[in-house]
Image (spheres, rainbow, N blue to C red):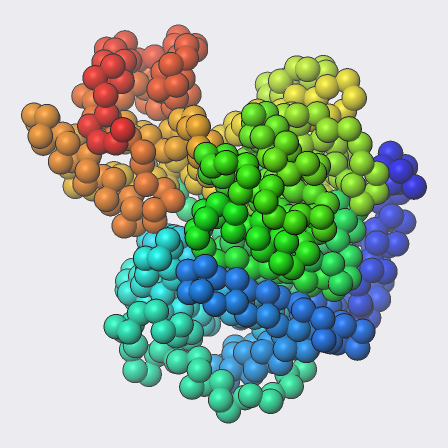
Length: 632
Ligand code: AMP
């Protein structure tokens, strides 16, 4: 069947389509009902079916491929490579699961995982899945405030962390950040399980609370922990993502629907099957890491590569060397990473034997044409843009070479993947936009399997945040889009206050709250400004409680930047800070962020009819002309 026939089948007969797809995973008890849509827009897939992600990702492969590599962990930070067969992985996961149980973690308990991108992170996730615990992985680049917010919301029974991570050869102690987050938190877990990598000899341990993994695991070296079967719709994991408020949203994913959707995507989109090798350069802290560094390839019986390190160290050919060494078939990365490599000679790519490599998929942010063209020329392989979100868990738009390779249109992630009923609609009228007309990309519910079930502990936020934008109950992606006459969709950026820095999603409100927590600040506005390398960078406009001279302004600007870095992590560090005497607002007091953003990018500030004080806009223009108080 070609793409059109598959897509049409998925839309016209969703239950028949997904019932067939569900056969790709192992069910302890088969589903009794494929779709329950009695409480729209909530939906439940594969109702009554019992399954387990760890069983499908590990145990299921033991008989046929126990000696095949499952996970390869390559770290150019520690200089170590770990290769685990499916049998090795089974062993490690069972030992880990036994340690979790010894710490009283069981079905439905939340476990926060704060680890670098290592094999241990994948093992920890799978061990949680095995016993029905709900993991919530927090990106290792996030600082204590971010971690504390997530702990408070998830209320975990356990936090798993490492002594330290490492970036560019610099050791980043994790444990002091964890200790600080637990101080800040109102719901600290009773135990912290520490994986000591030997990177930070000073790593602090709190007796009675902190447990050393190496010591705890010796008693469980040969444990076999039975799989906890879960009803398909029970929560598998929570992954926090940024929204329009300062409070992150816990995207809650189910078990059965997720496994089925990932299996479909591995076959039809990424074209990776049993015994083949996939290399996704993302981090376990992000959704791509969950779906295509850990669960997707393992569910498919493939080999996955986890890379810890910079793409340019020891030289900009390091990823391609890994591809050649392990015969990688499908690679998955981000436009930002390619832009970083583009600064170097394409020969760093060409000098490696990439005969096994079939595709490079890129996602997470808009893929600009020069970047796509450069990497396509350097590789001589198809470069495929795919669009999705933390919420969807797997691609919404992509070409599907596992089914049929359609022509690429540069600048577009392509066509809807199976099960997604997409529309582009006018923001104000809610009517369908004509071809080439800008609108908001929406998904007609029921959402397909794999997408979020709800926001953890907050159905209201799920309903209002995603389904409350139009008269009809439509899931809003909050992305602007246009569609051409062939159905190819082009994504034009977010319609809300979320920005995308190097493929990382950040809420401007979170950064504003952090800036405002710096004592000298009266008020702050944070916007995303285009950046050649990172796509967007955060830029701050702030007013001070007390006006001061140049030196005082520079001091305050520096303080704000340090505060954000300390609270939220280096990813959120403002590129530039401008101090002004007033911020442009509407008469009702709303910050005119879009006008600020336009001005900062040298564009027309747009509709200013609601502007309260024209002087504030002048202030901003002057500050931009003068240059930032901190940053280049
Ligand atoms: P995240 O949830 O962190 O994956 O961020 C999702 C957001 O990233 C989307 O809402 C888009 O704004 C953006 N995004 C992801 N993939 C693409 C893509 N292929 N093209 C354009 N924007 C993308």
